[in-house]
Length: 359
Image (cartoon, rainbow, N blue to C red; front, side, top):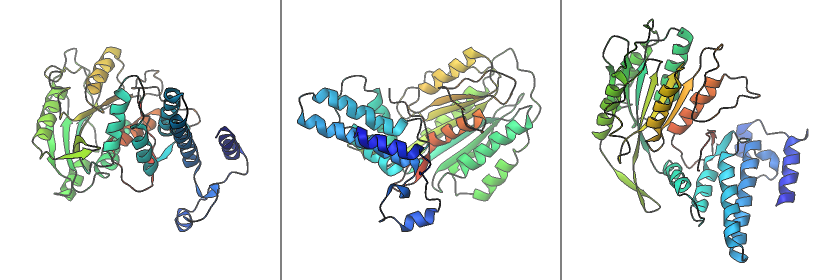
């Protein structure tokens, strides 16, 4: 296996390596042989998967079964989380997770729980996504990026039978429910028109020294709305799972927000996943409070976007490296949020790479 991996890596790094650029030609050549018909990412992912399979099968035959199981788990998870792989194949994700779930190893059960969450994305067919967005932003380009993310990466990527809502927050006024929670295909044109009306931002008032309750009121409203939706269960490997994934995505600025009344609800069964996207927040304590709040939901996460190129502040749930990438850091962070919201299907198509932490 080591010799095979070495030959493959040397080939990928060599000048001889070339990917077939024509996707239609690749589809017509499914029965053809040779590494040329596979992408670099797939070759790396599949090689790591084969290492895991090798150690799993070897553990059945030798006395050092526990050690082999640890190695099998290590390589299986590497095939999903390796930083050198940008696009991962859904069919191989499902196959990998099902195999690694059967491996008996000591240690925390957190990674198995996270694997179960990822596996459920193959079976869950519906989503509800409720967006809370603070409209006051002094930088028009930052507002354009964020509202485009809401329209193109969230709303347009939802399926017709997914649910969507939009709440606007402005300084000096109560949160406004612009689009009530409803199926995407219902009044689709009206929803598009409403989102287009938020293309312009208003001037941001100086942050108040007092904490606002706008975010907590909006979150409470979203949690209640998600709770009113029909509940249908499905079973993934005999484990009961909700047939719909509920998400709340909040985009907020540096204004201090009081989370009173929210903490007591989080951690309960059925609470939506919460993603908070901070915009130029420089208060470390506030970032940490948002991060703790998001981490109380099963797949929640917090990212803080820096649109001020002169500032050094950029807090995220994990360090996002930008070496060799011409895209700004906020672009990569928004891609990770988009990846977290998506559901998988059985087709073998590339996905946006997401750093999944199973530890």
